Length: 339
Image (cartoon, rainbow, N blue to C red):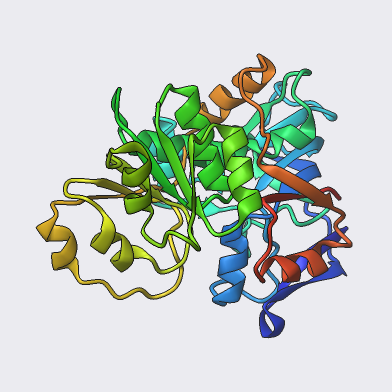
């Protein structure tokens, strides 16, 4: 099969022929229908945090092409599925309680050599992580369920109460996903800050009520107060670059700060700055199986859509050049790879 593998010396991808994986016991072989290019993939490549030859890609949908032993009668060739991009041990206390994301032996699909990702024609997933798609959800939209789940989990981690306002730093796919969920759950004032006008336009379409041009207003809190007369109660950091000290300095007292971007670069902070303001710091990571099911059902009922997250698509052959392009400043949001 064809796959785009990480090339460590060039920090980029190269298209090559690799062996098609064979599903083991309890596994499914999927033919990839669509896979989103995630900012985490790009940051990991830029910072050389992944192994040479790795196949990235963890936001995917696909069609069952083969089943391993022990998958029972639940799965058939041709089933349309999504899957949580994780490989838990399956036997620990957390796994038995279906709290897979908390498995101490958890491996991430698309971030390890043992569990290759979906920048390829096929990949293997644990059958227990897969979910059948209803006929009303198309495979392209389904590939956006993973970033929407990240946004849902992050929004929930902010514990936004009725009447509270939020500020989102960064109008990339996850920032826009958080704005969508904030609007869905009835938040009245949803401010979002970014340097790129087209991304702010997408955020507005997703439900953001106040768009802040970060080139004109480096202090988005001040801009929000000027416009609404209110401070944000919860701030979501969705940039994924060193920003924490700046946020410590500009946030009002007792703000809940949710770190979603999870920068992979070293960052120097003075903790007393946050302490003096009694800031509450929350690290948001992951989602649950039920989050995927919930979003899938909302899509089936046409109550939530991936718009305006998706800004384009490329073929697997075009992926290496596209991956290189996305490492530079650009106006895109979520690009799908369609093998």
